[in-house]
Image (cartoon, rainbow, N blue to C red):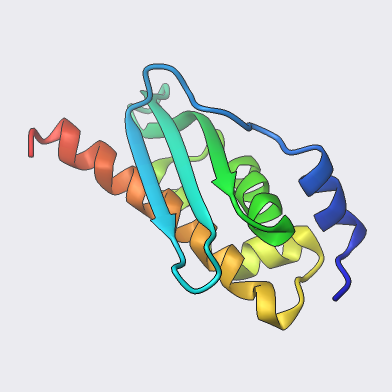
Length: 130
């Protein structure tokens, strides 16, 4: 199995790694088959147009090269976007940034997207007092 240079770089030099302090939303997902577990933390603020944006985002991943690289890339893609824009991100956006993944590892990009969506869901549930 071979990985693109972008995947290797994102694995060796992950962006936004670690747990955010005072995060507004947390998304945790896992794949019981491969054992990967991802946590995404988001901090939300309003921009000048009163839109909620992802002001800061970070991740922690227990998993393979592809899982860690996908987590790093999704944080880069979502940071600074409105929640609506971030929720439109999909596995194809992650794969394009990574320069593709081996077919057997594409599920890692889906896990990263799922973790982002869960973090937004968590934020909304806390904001709405549920």
